[in-house]
Image (cartoon, rainbow, N blue to C red):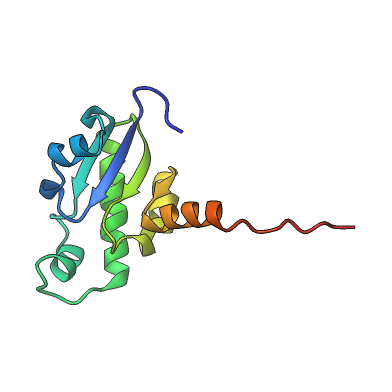
Length: 126
């Protein structure tokens, strides 16, 4: 889907926890990814990681979209976004609207695999 020298931007809850070792174990060249964590966000990080607050979904959406914009602005070769954290899929639509790139998360992978295992019949229109 991506051309040579294009990258995937990975938005994750804790950027420092997603290391080169993880990518190497998965056979991923680290020059093809750019990682940004949510450490700078008070609401998202406070609710999900440090467990010091209550999640406000409106603010969380603003924070995630803001970090996605920051991620894309950091490297113009980013041409797709991966929402690595399982708490981020509800904001995938907002991220895509904001950055105009394909956005992947665990739901897109589940749907991809499911669609291959359980095909739906086409309806013929007569």
